[in-house]
Image 1 (cartoon, rainbow, N blue to C red):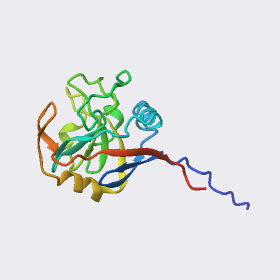
Image 2 (cartoon, helix red, strand yellow; image 1 turned 90 degrees about the vertical axis):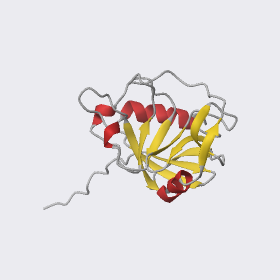
Image 3 (tube, one colour; image 1 turned 120 degrees about the horizontal axis):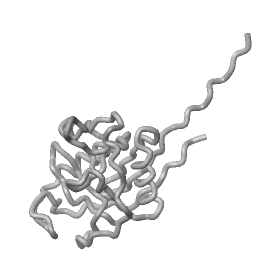
Image 4 (cartoon, rainbow, N blue to C red; image 1 turned 60 degrees about the vertical axis):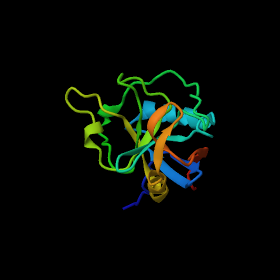
Length: 178
């Protein structure tokens, strides 16, 4: 009997977020959240995230980034995308989800990393939820270090802004190893 090599399975895309508090390597769920991943990767390829700050940090909940410069200037964004929160993925510790307004289909560039299992952010009957599109596979300790920074009011925000500026210095797609 002939043996056949297993077909290679396409790995999900990985992105390295180099922050002022160390690298965070994320794996994107290409098949489960295709529109969201495509949107995120477009921002990555455009260099959009470079210089954006973590502007919302709530220990035990989330760290949020992707919309503001260190001067609290809002960055110009692309059109909003459809909410893919119905993809079966859950807002668990270490997952990335799209931030949005009360309009479920208003997500653009901002995303957050869950610091805990946040079931109430998942899609449920009568609640559209927040679309999970990736997870941290390396550097969760750096995310936790960001979450430990004291916060307060700054820029247009009344609370939850790190008193020490934490920024994404670069975001790069990681090419798969051969």
